[in-house]
Structure formats: structure tokens, C-alpha cells
Length: 94
Length: 488
Image (tube, rainbow over all chains, first blue to last red; front, side, top):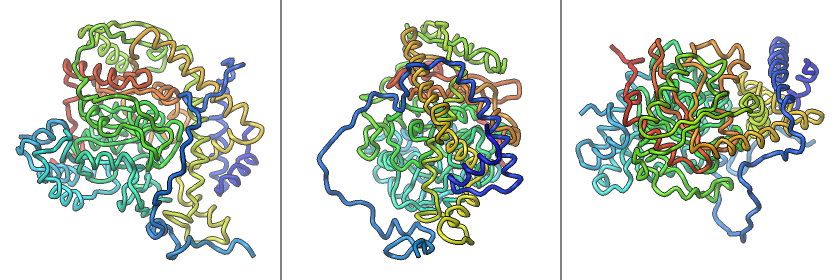
């Protein structure tokens, strides 16, 4: 099921590049892991509701409250390329 | 007084009484770091000057301090944000990132009078069971420098074991506090999901991640948790467990407590010396009046695959934020915006992180979602149900933490599946959101520490800590200290 073509596709989705040798190794590794995960098929889960949260949670609503957020300058200071107003990236729209 | 031999609470009391100054304590820890960390590599960043300045600032308040941990030096795993102090997640991609805010956990401990010594090494993005996937080099086990300290909070466990700070705060997604605590001979606790705010914890798998302490004993863990726990509006999953003061609940009286031994946790794949030590621990608890009950946990074998599907799925989503734009490191050469993302992520992430991102993308992709991700969420419900059933028969569970003692460096990374399987006793707890702790309960023939795991129902922290405290009143495994990394 897992082959180099699928790994290439997943890498594209994940914005990762794999070198030729790496691609083979990653394919073999993922194949082994996914084959092992098929052990789950032994367990009958028909009718079991998928559980994303262990506690019964529901939406809790409250009124909006205005409060100060982070300082823009401090946030921008951590970016690899920024000025005092924005994150800088290569031109993305012609 | 040999400061190193004190627990965090004993040191806090000595500081309050004026027998030790905050600065003396900080200096002692920094001296230990200077002497030993060249060999151990437990720290990524040491903030020595800050620590000494903070000690001076805290000293005047020592006598009237309310917190039992006031003035006690400690350190944080490097995935917990600290305002203005480099936070790397042990990854190249975060580079020199200095967060513009501190995590709720860091703030809470600062409020409790902590003196931070710096940031602790770990597996990159907390993905690993050995602390070898760090961009900053592997951590070594202070009991044997040729072995790993466990992971992913390996730096935290090694630092506490080696006297480089009196306690540490780590995170546990699938065993990342308990397993290194076991391999390094310290006491570590993963609280109930939601008990500690995750605000400012760099996310790996948000539905499983939880912050907790690594300490010299259960009483220290209780004190750190008293400072850490509570609802935080900045983390919508945090909750108020109504714990009261855990430290005050440590009576050591466990008469009548029903301790369950899940048969499946003592079966095939478990090292004989580990099995014997954990069963002896059951005997110690029995000696203090607990009842030991054997029971079955039939779904154990499904926990590792379900865990790795859910964790990888969440990781692939969480780690999409690292793109070389908003913070951290950016690749030097690229051609356009998409290539900037691609080059930055390709050069910035290590192999294990990439493997989990790809695995996550796979289990979430159209055509495989139902067979893997949805199935794993169903298995999670089944595992939660199995724990519910177990806790009808007992008050807490006793199991091993890991199938073996600490493996040698370099042995695990070549076979990721084997490494994943070694998490078998710890990951079910995260899937069910339960509290669990690891306590030293013996040594193997090679002199390596063995950990015993106590697992409780939701909000059962007090019960677990009291059982561990009772155990530690009758044993001294937690008091032994390793010499690895000491200059002779």
C-alpha cells in the first residue's frame, strides 16, 4: 500500500523534500509501521463512537471581553525576516 | 550540610529557616552543571547569570515565603516557552527563538519562587523515547554514560538524577515523563489530562500532551503539582480538578487500598529483572496494608498502534506552523514562497519528526482516514472503557513503566517500530487521559534503575502520590544517586 509514489505525494502535502536514498528508507520504514498498525483490525469496533476527548465536553459560551493581546513588535522580533509592521516573505502574488 | 542530598522540599525548608541562602543553592546547582553536564548534555541552555540575579531578588522574601519550593533551583524542558529565553524544542527549525511570552507552567512556578537554571534537552519536538533525536546531541544516562536516559524528557530526568537542579518540569504525550524518570531513577508524574494548563507548551499531540514534574520523590512531585495545577482560561482543555493541597494528603496510610496488577502488563516481552522488581513493589505496598488484586487488561496490544496514529495525525497538523515565516529559523536559499516552506522544513526538521509528519499525513488522507484515524479514535474509546472496568475492581493499577532498563545509545533509532513498541505500558494512560507516576523500585544486575508505574482514575493524583509516598517510606531506591559525569 505504501510505495515511493505515495510517500512523494505525502511529502508534497507536508512541504517536505526527500532525497532519493531517504525516500526509499522512509517508504520502507512507513510500510513496516503501517503494516503493524493493521493489528487494530483484529479488534471489533463496530458501533463504537470515535472518541476525540476523554471528558464529556460541550461548548461553553461567554460574552466577548476586550483585552490586550501580545505586543506586535515583540511578536515580529522573533521572525527570521520581518520589519516593524509585518512578516516578510518572497513575493507570492504577481 | 550536603545540599545535593536534600529533596526540593527539604531545601525549601532550609532556605526558609535561613540555613541556606537562595544563592548558595543556585551556585551548588550551577557548579554541578559545570562539572557534569559536559558529559551528560542534559541542558540546551543554561541561564546561570539570570539564576544568580533571581536568587538575590528572592532572598529577602525567604523567611516569610508561603511556597514550600521558594528559592529552590529547577529547570524546564525546552518545549515550555520562557519569555526572552531561547526555547528550541531541541530542533534546528526553532533556532534562536526567544518566545515573547512564558508558558502558564513557567509563570506558575515563578510565582512559587522557583529559580530557573535553564532549558533541558529532549527528543526533537518530544518525538522519541531516548532523547537521541535532539539537534543538540543526545543526552546520556548518569547511571551509565553509554546508555540513553529515556525520552523524551531525558534531559529533565538526567538533570534531577545528577543533582543539576532539585526538580524539573517536563511533558508527557506517550510516556515522556514516566519512562525517562524510570531509566534515571527519579519520580515523575503525568497528571490527568487538563490538570495543568498547556498554554505555552509547544504542541506535539494536543489531545495527549500533559505537563508534569520530575523530582527526587513523591512529596516533591506533590509540591510541584500544587503549584502547577488549575484551570487556565488560555487553555480551553484545562480544568479544575478540585484537588486541594496534594502535599497535605501524603499520610502514607494506604490500608485497604486495592492495587490492581494487570496480567497483560507482566507477560511476554517484559525483562525478568523488571518484572521481579515491580512485583516486589506490590509486596511493599501490601506490607503497608494495601490489597493486591490480579485483573485483566485485554486491550493492551492495541494501545501502541492507536497511540502512534493519533499522535502522528495531530503532529502533522500542529507542526505545519513551522514554516520559516513567523518565528525561528529560515533556510538560506529558496525560490519563491512554497520553496521557502519546503526548504526550511526539509532542512529544519530531523528524520524522526519527518517520519511522524508523513505518517500523520497518511492516516488523515482521503481513502485511509476511516481505516486508520477513525479506527484509532474508536480504539481509544475501547481502551478508556477497559480502564473504567479495571477501576471498578481496584483503586489504582501497578505496572512496569518500560519493558527493559535503559538501552544503549544508538540501538533504538535504527528500528523505529521497536522503539515505538517499548512505549507499550505508558501510552494507554495518555489515550485515556489518566494520571500516572513512575517511581524507582529497584535496580537490575547492571546497576540500572527500574521504574514502577502507578496508574489512577481521572483526578486520582492524590491517591497515586500517597501510594508512592508510602512505598518511599519503606524503601530507599529514590535516595540513591548516580555518579556519571562527575569529574574525578
